[in-house]
Length: 33
Image (cartoon, rainbow, N blue to C red; front, side, top):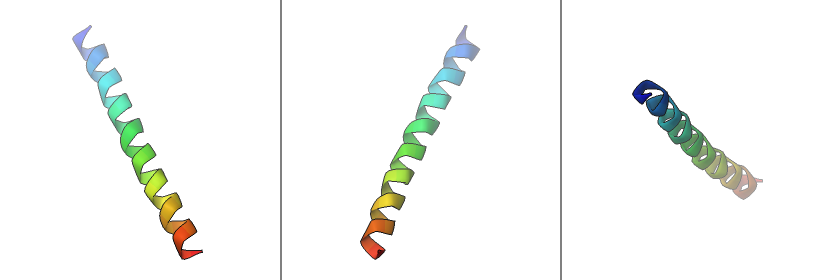
């Protein structure tokens, strides 16, 4: 159970980080365009 919970937490954290980077990338691209 702990291993599964850890995996879920890691996935959520990775998704959050990816979302932040995507938002920054979109803002940067629109800013330069």
